[in-house]
Structure formats: structure tokens, C-alpha cells
Length: 132
Length: 143
Image (cartoon, rainbow over all chains, first blue to last red; front, side, top):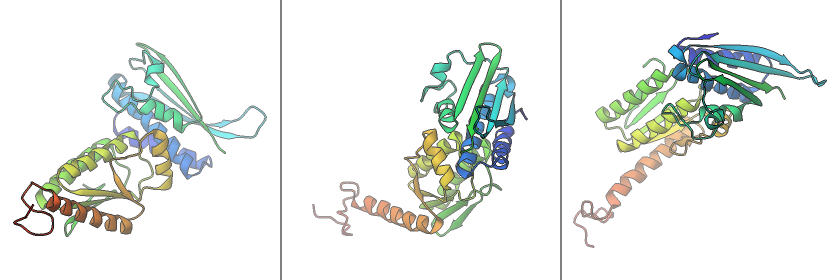
């Protein structure tokens, strides 16, 4: 789904929560996943060019032999990019007047998080959670 | 405000958040609530989040800010009904809401609110040197 403005923060987190529920995640994981998506959607609205970006949610199936189901959410924008990813991932660092909890908090809520970012061309953050 | 109406019951403002709040809803709730505190002189606020399934860092920070604002207006606030899944998520997010008083449900919340409001009143009358009282109800004092 596209992120075009503040209203889409609520839309995206509810969408993510519903997707997690349909994939069989329990209440706590639904909350973790929805909250992580909310943090990332807000980052787009605050920092991306014109506050625009894209969120894609899909089901994961493990390939390592064990039968596992997961959820993958890709959040991308064509904004200014993150100059120093390590710094952005440290607790308390903020460039936008927030508390600096968004990215490090999101990482703690999920099983996996990868960030690809190039200054001037955008950011793509992929988060994953596996069903237990 | 449709998503979080503020209801006055005696000296208490009861706010029930009815659905997932947009950022601007949370900010207008703050303005609305503090405005009503000033207008009504209410001493307590009970904020019910029992139907809320997602509290992210923005809303968490707003709860802290609202609690601080309520305190600055001389009132007390108790947040009730935080769902277990929300509590776990908030802690992992790094937001323990230390500035916010909480209770498991509205019943306990009202009881806690009553104690906090009474304690605050007692503190005001007890504070020495402020108005000459010694806290025993003797307006003339004898320190």
C-alpha cells in the first residue's frame, strides 16, 4: 500500500495487524508487528520526500528445512536516505525531534531487520517475524 | 472529539479512547483535555485505553506528555486498560511510561485516582511555610 500522508500511518498498522492475524500470529506478535510498521510508516511521513513511500507485506515460508511461516514487510521511499545507519539504529539518536526510538525499537520488536539506504536516492527497510 | 470523548463525572474527567488514534487526534486530545481541566477545575483524569490494540512510540510519548500536562494543572491522571500485548510491546520498544500512573481496569483506576487526589490535597495543606498551616487543620499554626 502507498504511504501518502499521516492518515496512512493508522491504515498501514491496521493492515499489518490484520495480515499478521491471518497468518496465525498471536496477539502479542500482532501488536509487535503492527507497532513496528507504525514506526516505519511514520518515518516515511516525517522524513521521506513529500512524505511518500510504499509498504508491501507478504507471507514467508522457510527454506531451511523446518516448516515455518513468517511475515515480511518491505518499507521503501525515495527520500533523502540515511547517512549513518549505525547512528540511526542507536537508542536515543534522533534527527527529527522525536525520542529516537523508532528504528532501534522496531529492531527489538522484530526477528530480522535490514536497511538499505543511499543518500539522495532513498531507503528500503525490510523487517521479518517468524511464527513460533 | 469523536475518537476519544471526554466525559465529566463530578471532579473527574473520564476519557475513553474508542478507536485507533491518528497523530493529530492524540494531539487534539491533549489540547481538549487540558482545556477542560482548566475550565472545569477537575482534579482527576481517568484515561481508558482498553480497546486500543496498538500503542507506538508517538502515542506513548503523547501519553507521557498528557500526564505531565495534567500534573502541571494540579490534577492527577490514571491510565487504565492497557492490554497485555500492548504492555509487552511498549517495554520492548523502550517506552515504560514511567511518568504515567496506571491501573489494570477502570475500577482500580478510580480507586487509585481517589487516593492520588486525596494525597495531593493533603500535601498542599501539609506544606509548611506556604500558608502557615501545620497540616492538622489549624489555620493559625503554632510552629
